[in-house]
Image 1 (cartoon, rainbow, N blue to C red):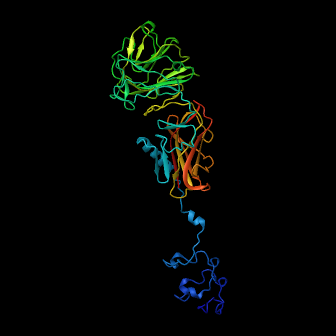
Image 2: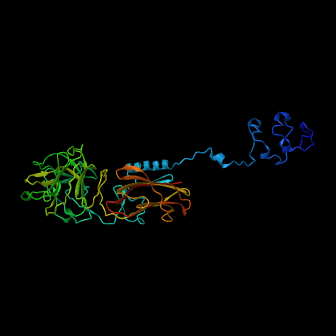
Image 3: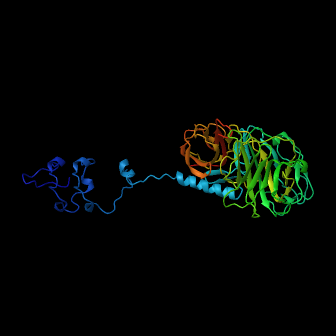
Length: 488
């Protein structure tokens, strides 16, 4: 060392006799050492260790403002790093982006589209669905749901054709093939269509007729629905308001059965043989306002009750203890014969007429805005997406889907979801699904956040699979409106 003598107050020490243990803490201060007298080269490597320097003996003011550690290795304890880092879970943000994408997709009638590290399926059609490997899936009106292949719809009249056409077709497959006959001036019209190219125009003097069928007398649940728009009051006779549909005889046998009229502000049901009748009205809704209204008449077999919904809202009245009658009269649309012999004709429009032997609606709902499809008997669903290729190996995944239910499904038991990064193979175990809240009546937002998929086979071939279990019509049915799969 360059320092040869140290004054200790007791004696003078020979060169190199001073070690850390011989110097009392603070005995030698910076002012007692001449500038440059001790340099780094004078100290042997490791001759002074951290344990030999008292805490605080070297202050910040004694260290140069800059120093070069480019050739050194600096090790910091983990606690010193994490103490200044705040964790942030961005999965909620990712899920909200997915929900916004659903809205954009629905608004623009998009089906499948890709974003960076994400894919959206909106089910405007079957694009995005691996139809070859999915089972019991059907896409209708923006909903993917399970089917058993058997239609429960026994009458379906779309009215999507050319202006003034008098050809009327039953598109249903669940019942008999019905022949529909148009009388007089009953035609398809482009003047006030609701969905598709045309609607059915009734001029207040004519009708549609269908021969009697066992499809019109059912011992099951049923739903009769259509869109209605009034044009005027031409053809109404006495208390026989505009006839919508029903089985009604001629003037010599005028008692109507299973018959629906337009009432003063709502609708009126009458079944002469069963002696059941009722007005159906929804407060604040006037069906004589010349606007389009969705109307759904439902019969619940087990409860023996009939309800009517106008624009998705249940009327305040309910017919109870009711079993619909059976008779051999033909089915009329646009005309009904009243019990006193007067005839009520419809002056207005009908569109998307559907009779289904199923309880399609059991609570308030949002009316459909696209062409009505057939309703099928319920069955378990396996929904598998097509492959979307990630730009880099995916190690985390987020799944979001919109679920509509009839009844109640238990997540993880009645509804399960999986993710793969290896195409239609090597799926994860069933994801932990979370109910994030409602987006409408009987509709829930379901998510699986920040799922670790780093241990799965494959790398970038991204897919999801959703399955339903224990499906039971009316109590455990699932309808999927949109799915988002994201990854990182």
